[in-house]
Amino acid sequence: MGYRAMFVAGLAVGYVLGAKAGRERYEQIMKAGQQVAGNPAVQKATQTVTTKTTEVTKTAVAKAPDFAKSASAHGSKIVTSAKQMAADHLPSRLGGSGKGGAADDVDDVSADGHLIYPADDSESVR
Image 1 (cartoon, rainbow, N blue to C red):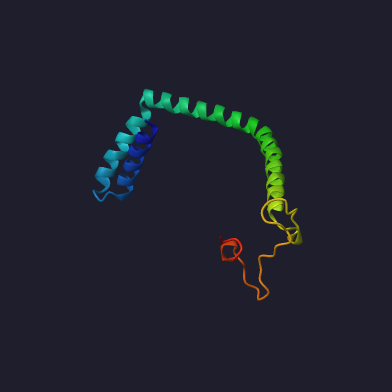
Image 2 (image 1 turned 30 degrees about the vertical axis):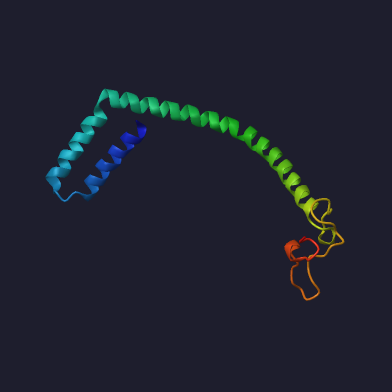
């Protein structure tokens, strides 16, 4: 429902700004808009939305510091875990622990500087 109201409001504003019907049509549109804005039901709805928005904003502002602390704590745990996982997959000569993946004594770079892929190795293809 809110999207429809915003669409209609945007359509009206666009029409007013882009209308080439002249000053008379502009005055008609402005008068109709003022009548809608002056309607008690519209004023009540506007007040309700304003009140609810203020409440939600206050709640968000009150919760933001706690959320930031929680996110910071969880973020550092995730970063530490990611670093450890990366180190486990790096060979020791690159600063990793070399626990995962291939053995450290196997070099994947040939003497001429080209990468050696397991599928290219004659021993791994049987």
